[in-house]
Image 1 (cartoon, rainbow, N blue to C red):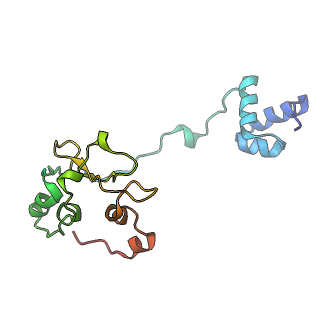
Image 2: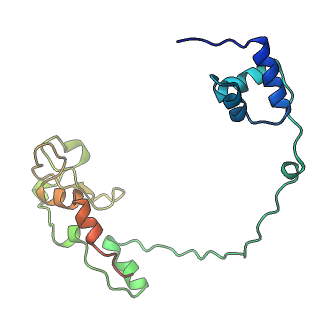
Image 3: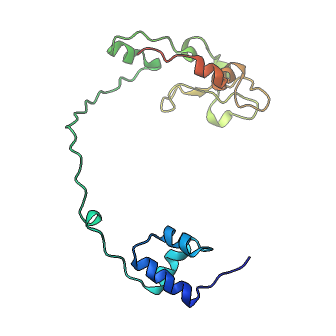
Length: 168
């Protein structure tokens, strides 16, 4: 790798281009075999003054006037499966498949400290709730979830694209 030094001619050319108002990138392209950062470094080492600002950049640009926007804050009801939210907006939602279709036996439920490589790590419920637990079922080889939760977690991209968003 050849290291180019700043010859007197190149330094003079740099000074002229800098005073002419060219950007560091433009100067680097003009000089050749030097990067934008090398130009900036040399300008600082030489103590070259900042260039005079053009009138367009010296004056602040006028801001776009935007209409006042009013934000309405809606408190979120605390409930399992967002049913309270559905009632608040009178929208019918499908039941949560985890809460209704996937009943985890009490003997299978695990805490965070009880999890290991062969147990399902699927969280069930709200972590701030004392009734929170992990599925604890037998996990599939090389995966953190049981067969049921793997089907939920690992959906093929083509299937996700085909599903239409549900009306709210």
